[in-house]
Structure formats: C-alpha cells, structure tokens
Image 1: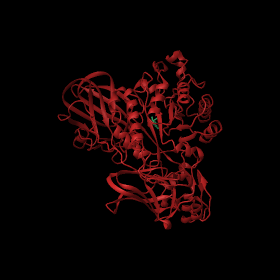
Image 2: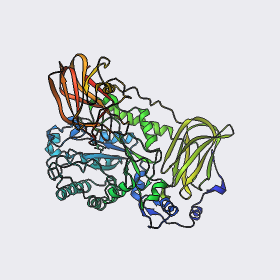
Image 3: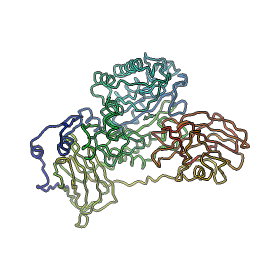
Image 4: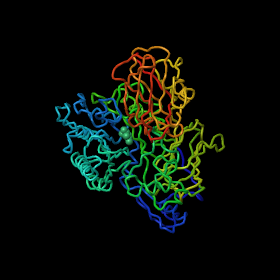
Length: 633
Ligand code: FUL
C-alpha cells in the first residue's frame, strides 16, 4: 500500500477548506466570463481561475479518446478535397458494415465517433431532401442506403456516442455564396441530422472555406446554427467553428505543452471573433492562448478546451497507396501522451476504405493502442486523494518501497477551474529529491514521461497558480517504452543523384535543394508575380512514370507551400506534355504531409517541370523540400 502525505501548511484537503482558501468566495463562471472594465490584473486572474466547463464540455473532456471517420466521395476518387463535380455513381461501398467500424473503435478504446456526413464536396452520406448530391443518387444499396442511419444504429447497439461533421463549405451547392439561401439550406441539413437519428453528442464544423461558384463569399449564420443545435441536441458540444471545443491548431496530433482550456481566444463563430482576436494578435494556431500577459489585455475569457485531430494515415480519407503508412503503435502512443496527456481530447481519424470497411491494419493498430493503454495504466503506483495546494505548496505521495517509475500523470479538478501555471515533479531517489519533470499547465490531465528512476516518493510542487490549485489526482506508472523513431521518408522511387536543375525561378543553383534527396534542405524560389517553376533533367529516359511527389516544409511556418500546380513531362526538354493542369493539393495548408500525385496513365520522360499556380496564402514565392518521381515497382 502506498501512503498519502501532505504538508499541512501548504495543503488543504477538504472541500470546506478549499472554499475557505478562496476566501469563502464560491463564485464560478460557466464557459464565459467578462471582466469589469476597471478590473486589475489580479482581479482578472482571480476570475480566470474560477472559469469552469459547462456540463456538456465536462462530459466531452472525460471521453478522452474520440474517433473520426472520414468517408465519402473522396474515398472513391483518391482525393483529399473533392470539388463538388463528382458523379454520385462513384459511391458504392459494397461491403459497408457500420458494426465493423463501431466494434473496432470500441476495441480501440474510443468513446465517441464523428462521421463526415458531408465534406467540402457537398456529397451527403444520408438521403437528404436538400440536394440530389447524396447517397440517394448512388448505386449503393440501390440508392436506398443511409450511412448516417447505419452508423447511428451500430453506435446505439454498442454504446458508442455519436457525432456529425457537416462541412459549412460546400463546393457543390448552387446556393453557396448566396448567403441567406445557403444558410437556410445548411440549417435544413443540420435539422435533418439532428432530428432523424437520435442523440448526437458532437457537431463538428471545420474552418475551411472559400468563395462560392458565383464568386460571392458565404457569410455563415453561426448564431442560427448554434440555436438549432442547442434546441435539437442540448447535450451536443459544438466543435471548431463551434464554441464548446477548440481546434488545437495543427493536424499532427500535438497539443501544446502549455494548453489553457481557460483561454482569451474568442470562438471563430462569434461575430466579434475577428476584431477581438486580431486586436490581441491571436489565432487558433498561436502558441499562447491563456497567459497572464494575454489576460492583462483581454476583456473576456472562455472555457474553450482543445481537441487534437489527427489521422492514423497521412491523409484524412482512405487511399490504398497509404496502407504502408499507417502510424505505428509507438507513434500513436506519442500522440496519446501529446494530446490526452496535454489537457486535450484526442480525435483520431480511422477512414473506411472503398469496400466500406475499416482496413485490417488500422483495426489492429487501434486495438494495440488500447491494449497498451489499458495494460500500462492499469496499476497506479500511488494512492492520492484530492487536495487543494497553495502557490508554492507541495503534495507528496510515498511509495511502500523503491519502485521503478517513468511516467507521472497529474489531474486538476477542472470543475473548480484550471489554475496551475507552473509546476515541478520530483522523485525521491536514494534519499534525495530529483526533478523528473516540470511544466506550466496541468488542466484535466497532464502526463510526464522521463527516464525511469527507482523512487520511494513522488512530489508535486505548484510553483505558480491562479488561486489555490485543486489537484484531483497524482498517479505514477512504469510503462513499457517504445521506440517511435521514424525512418527517412522516401520521396522518389528512382535515384536522384544524376538529376540536374535545368532552370528554376531565381536560378538553378538554389533550386538544387529541391532535388538533393535531403528533406532537410529547402529550395525557396525568388519572389515573382509570374508562376514559379523548376525544370529538371533526370539524366536518362525513364519508362513507366506513374506520378510525382512534392514534399512541403514547415520551416518558416508553412510559407511557400504550393496550393495549385501544373506538371509537365518531356523526352527532349523542348516539347512538353502537360500531365496535370491547375490541380489542388487538397488540405495542404492544414496537413503538410508528402503529396503523392498519380498520373492518369504511366508516361515516359527524361525531363519534368513542376509549376506553382498559387501559394497557400498567395505569397509571391514557393518552397520545396523535395520533389520525386513515382514509378510502379
Ligand atoms: C479540415 C478539412 O479541410 C480536412 O479535409 C479534414 O476534414 C480536417 C479534419 O479538417 O479542415
């Protein structure tokens, strides 16, 4: 048995004392707090410490692991973003079995699943009355199928919560960009989804958006959408462009080490969000969303916790050529530590394939993940009780004998707010305290990994907090260590050592970095209003070229990432054949992974030219970490 010891001066263990420690002030602010105009920083910080989640936000946070299913017309076209012109006849997942999905997700430890009921291409996975661009026009189940219904029934059968992704951006709807008409259309779709299928626990509105077919920009009526959701599904959190759940800011599975659920960022769906966030210099991707410096400048705060969305594969949709790139168990465990372990909920995407099934390898991998978590976190080596700790105070948990520890998990009682701002974790090793971890925020859950020590006690020191910190639990484990080192990413199927740059925007010399087989070196073209391009001589004619690859870079943010491109091939470097014209790297601005592009048919060439039509933010230069040529084995 382990024992739990506290230093009385620094520690108050009963709720009465917790209230006393707050000066008898029991005021909490649910989800939002406005600061009085003349509030001092001290008063603001005090109010920030008493900002708490709503009931539905708390229930969502406790799920910890949630799953995404990206499925739709893109599954059948091999794209990440469809443009809305796809023929519904392409959609025919003949073996679709939603029970297989849900059973696999349950075995993977997931508590809620969100389906892309409609992605940006506008194709609806349920037989909506709003458009013909849906499963009803597909050959699947003779046009009588309903993916939403089949999934929801499976969820109900296996006790899985259910959520819907309904893309506001719709590249098919004719009325898109005619704001009032599209808002009606969208509300009707939302109403169908939230009325006809039983309980929904999360509604996910992504932030991607562009101009409509008529060139007009769509002005979304978020307030109206929220009203519909709250009326029809009061227990559903609204995510991303919703105001209950915040996008973490990347699609890599990475929460911030300093992750505030109590944040000054105004949710994107609020009318004032642009003006307030711009004035504070903030966006979802900012590294700091809740420090005292920001609180000093802010006039309000939100309980707006982070959700970490990431795909088990490089893309969000299933592409068979990515079967070998399913994340390893070690990578998924890292993601778990860096999402759930960083005060966030994990939203892991496992996309169904063209048969309408989750691929075997994905199913195995999530099962391994759950087994790893269940096994390694089954035995807490400590017995801690909830405690209130003053700034500078300590909480010590003793172990009965020297025990190997390499992971400590901290939890705050967020029903009393998020308060810890700076902490240290130490282990008693051979009679001395050794610091094994430190950080800023804790929040709902904070996990720390460190090289194993033989500890006889674990101590948490709260160096700084907003009022007394309410520590719910300290746990310690000795988990199995996995090696998540990734091998080098193969960009080109053919050797690049004989390749030469013939010409490039800004000169050939600098552009060598794009074809040197080294992903670390990056070519940044000269700035130009014209299209930026690079022309390469591969040194010999290559038969059977099936496509090309472009590796973007995140050095310098994502600046220079190509969005639309042209691609040409040539046998002699004089007469050129255009094999790709103004094609989009769908979602590249959010997910800067290696882009592999397949040609319609294999070709023969000695030269190629890659040309950028535009950059993700219309900058006048492009960057290329690496280019490669793909060839069938
Ligand atoms: C983004 C979308 O553009 C991607 O296609 C994907 O759905 C991701 C989860 O959200 O905003």
